[in-house]
Length: 236
Image (cartoon, rainbow, N blue to C red; front, side, top):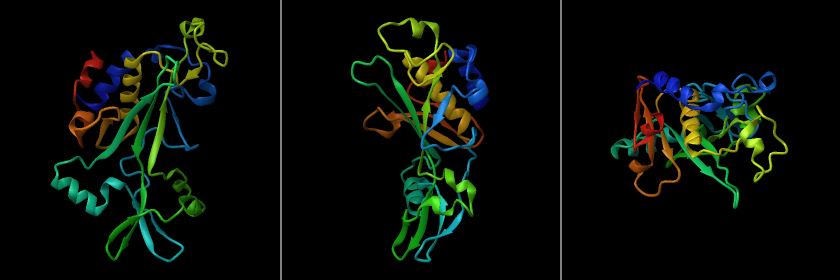
């Protein structure tokens, strides 16, 4: 299936797309869908090479460049030799608090690191991106990982559930509490496919062991989506 085809199918399945969002004037029409962490203001669609290739100088005078960790020259070669994906990585994870029935989901999207060449190879870090915001305003969004919290729209059924405290919510407001694991997974797929432009692969953080078993999906350079480990079942 194509990326657009999967997005259209998921839009049919995710209930919040058919609900009224009462805070759309403040957050935007689809502002219920996700929340970027660290106070970042990332574009809704993150370009394939977003914030890559920016050259900066450290305080010690050494010049480096921003790039994805996955594209370190030495790591890139190792991954190719091992037959591993070198595209951007997205990790899906979820959690719940003790005695709390709700689940909370996040996506961790590969961002950018600051890389400098050394006598023995390459090193990352050693610079604070915020020091360069005046010269490069866009660098304010530079993080090694972009963490995105998944969300949905509150229903009357939620509010009527007296076993849970919904005092701070109204019907139609945004919440990061999910009552359905299926809906949470569908939302994770939708947000990843909507926001991460270019080739990428997605893993499940809750699978231990073999990397192949962690795979959820992969999008190739032609925007074709391949599902792994039964992920396609949540589309039908």
